[in-house]
Figure 1: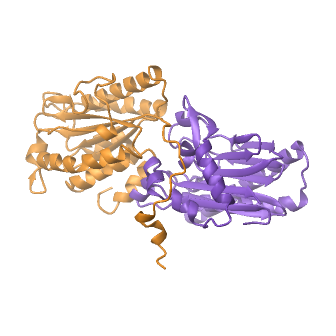
Figure 2 (figure 1 turned 90 degrees about the horizontal axis):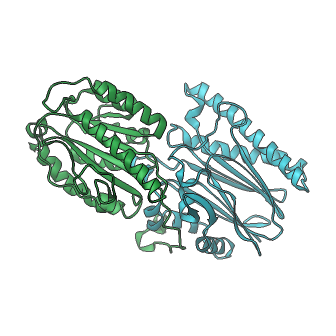
Figure 3 (figure 1 turned 90 degrees about the vertical axis):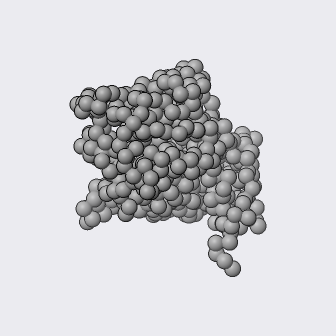
Length: 250
Length: 258
């Protein structure tokens, strides 16, 4: 007898009537670098931004599928920084924590075509994400009477932070202190993924050594798989580190 | 099956750990000792490098320590059961702290690298005693009284993920939760880890209020049926439907008096 036969997909056991409507809403901000370098760097033989768009197209169905299961309590907000400055790329496209605003449930997540250009206003993007996460948390608790889990930020960057004109900025030092307070007070978690060209020191200052993952190459498929792993409630920094330890510089 | 109980146990790793290439960090042990059923369930901390070792160690130590205590203890009232539960908790946690301190020293680790929760149930009808550190849960079923949450998940769904109390604590006491109940008509016991709590417990305003009737009716029926395959519960916990609802490790032990 095949010892694994009992786990065959064709032999799915009956559902005994498990409870399915318990909610602890969780909010995940995905921040994507769309600065000029994403248009000039190449990945998969094409500009990195085109490769990213292609990979996001393959990735979103997985997110939406998990949004009907393990990620059913997750709302995403997607923020880009680069072309056009700091933009909300999810939901209504407006920087609003209201219902029907920037946040969308995982099973309805769509991200439009991203364009590369401009500076790297990473600090402003993270500040906006923190503001929106807190506003959304309060709204869900106070208006909808639902409890919320700890907020999570997933930051993907390939350069050093600048202001909107492209001038280097030290404002990330202030942001690092804000993130530290958020970690202590709200159990906020920041997973930061640096792709080639990124300023390691800044990313470490923002995410701490535990939360920073330096990718050795522009393997965007693996990057997005990593983002999905980092979204799960039970996943912690060490889980992500174990999974990708052989592939990335850590 | 023990002399007095039909027991059905299941345990499986969650998708979050599967994706991260980590095996299950839950562990459980069941034994009937001199007429008292002992069930120990542990959930190794995802943040601890050797959590699975810690979980396996604490359930085996709990059974061992209670095997030493129980023959000399014939508790007959609430106070004596409370005393037994306290002694069982103290000895188990003391042994665990000592064991992981030794392991950590030998391997250049910290005791917290073996971090785990633990939930231990002692049952000899009409008495049920519980001690626990962390976020396990215990459900009882009694004829007439129905289902009850003898040990509820602390903090409900408002609890931040991973924010539970862990062994080994930094000092004695370890914030142990203890319960003793007299249930003359006990017809079922369930002990589980937090990966299942939202599937089998009903919450209101994020607080656990009662065990869900429908799944427990089916689960206890499975445990009590003579023809239930030993793997039935693990198959259910590893099934697609449960995997869709929980990405955490999942362990459940069901016991029904024979």
